[in-house]
Length: 346
Image (cartoon, rainbow, N blue to C red; front, side):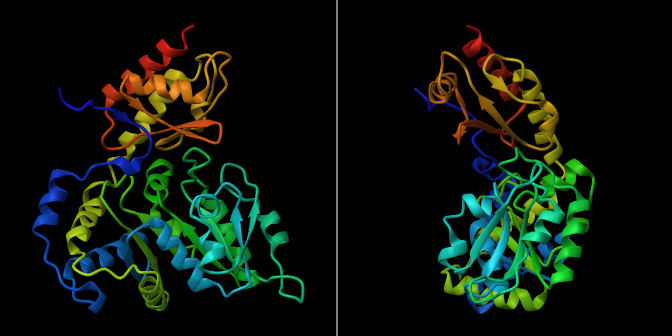
């Protein structure tokens, strides 16, 4: 018997590289990237910087490493950084803020990922004997734990004004920044012109198997390259991976709208079922986060029943996450709506 094929909604990180990516990887021209000799990596980094509107970029193995490097470059030990309380950088990146950079996070509440500018300004502190000084503001767009919410461009402008007023830097965790742009119609460069550095993933909706890019000024990237090396991120003939990232940036961005449409269709199909708390209007991109409170079935039991029907979803903090991506089609969405109805019908 063949291996069971699942409709995998756990994350857009499960995407498989396209056939064209695999061919490009097999035929990539390579060199030792630590020596600066890999032409494919250079091409990817130049393309990434141009796409994101920055002077330079750096290829890193993961988004977490990219964010780690940015915080390390922009801060000094014992300083404080402002983060949104549900942000990925604060909740899901293995406490690199404290472990690597030795700085203190100050988490603030938000409205769907957009922090109140007045609250941010009030939270900024000058260093004193008992008090750490604030040096960095971190923004996330789209915002994972707010269900793929798009942080409005006006919020970026407000954060820039505050940062300039107080001499702070802004780092954007833009793991899914292209999703934000496709959904809002705001060009990516319009978002990034208000931040000093940005990390974005190639390995999520853009479907590359590995890698992210960290972008900023040339001076910033020179420092970032040194930090990447000390973190063990110096790679050798890595053009075999960078080749897939080039296709991500040239062919996989515009199709993200398909993922958004499928997520909206799925949300509309399950939102009125017993035990489901979900407003389809909140589904702006490719992530659905729903509250599950059914009187006769737990989240884990429900996830197990979905799995029996060939559907994988993720349970997180009392909620269920479903993420659409390249490898989810219309049939997967309809199958999942049907499965939800069958499991929750009693």
